[in-house]
Amino acid sequence: MSHELKIERLYDATPAQVFDAFVDPATQERLHGSGQEGWTVRRCETDVRVGGTSVYAMGYDGVEPDVEVRVFSVVDRPHQLVFRHSMTVAEWGGRTVDTEMTITFEERDGKTLLTMVQTGFETAEDRDAFNSGWPAYLDTLGRVVGGGVPEDDTLKARHDI
Image (cartoon, rainbow, N blue to C red; front, side, top):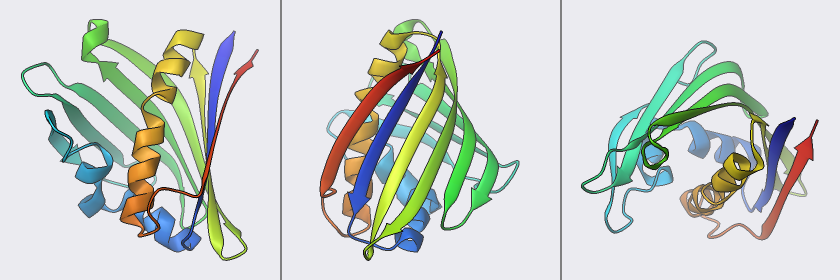
């Protein structure tokens, strides 16, 4: 059985603005938590193109960082991103969780509906752990695009066989 995480957010900005904020190298440290007390982004390399690899290492001060790697297979500005997502989680003994991520940016009455679908979780526990981190990332994205916290905080998690 494979588990899926789906999160939707409505931002008061155009798809191009949201897409650009999501991929801009200048926003990545902020999106990955810099500025949070006791949290450090130690590595931030962004290469958003088909075949490009982005790498982020972040975590609490004084402990091994978590490392996130994204390898892009689709970059269709401002409509869609698809990438292989690997996260090595230090507090899980350095275990790596490999998933596939599809993010769409749809215009809705002058706003943008961002839909993030992460597939391939081996356990519901891993899926739920990621569901505890992505909402803060997406809240920060809302602040980056200037709309504050997104209007629609719809969170959904479901299982797929």
